[in-house]
Image (cartoon, rainbow, N blue to C red; front, side, top):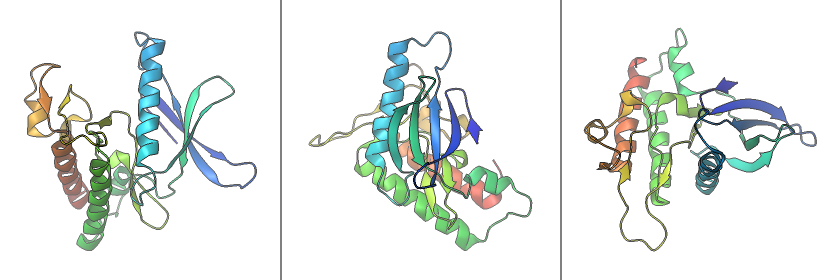
Length: 205
C-alpha cells in the first residue's frame, strides 16, 4: 500500500482471526549502509514505536518478525482511512473548521504522549498521520524518531543532524551548520504540527 527509500508496507490477513494488518518491510538505505547500521536503525524504530503504542493517537506496533525471505518486518495495526495527505488531496475533500480542529487536537494529544515518554518524532507531516475508519487520527512512521529523555533523567537532551521533511522544519533546523549543531526536538514536533494544521486547513502544501 506504500513504499519509500527504506521500507515497503503491505497488507496481510491473519490466518486465524482474519484481521487485516499492515506489515512494514525494512530495506537498506543504499549500498553503503552496512548490516550493523541497518540492524541498529531497524531495531531503534521498532523499540520506539512499540514503546509509544497503547495510546489512542499512536499507531499500534504489534511485533517484529522475520519473513520467508529473511527480511525484517514490523507488524502494525492497519488504519483503513488512509493518510491525511491523501485526504487533503482528494477532489472535493475540503473539511470544515471543526473537523480540522478535531484532527489537530488528536495530533497534539499524540505528540504530548510521545514527549511525556521522552520521544521526539521529528517527521510530523500529513503523510505520517493515518486515520481509522471511524476518523481517529494516529501518528505513524518512527523512522527518524529519537529518545531524548530516559526515566529518571531530569532534562531532555538536544537533537542533532538534519532529518525529516524540509517544508516542516523549524527555523532552528534550517539554521544548523553541521552534524554537531543541535536543536530542540520537541519544539520541532510542535512547529511541524502547526505547519501540518495549516496544510490540512488550506488543502495546500
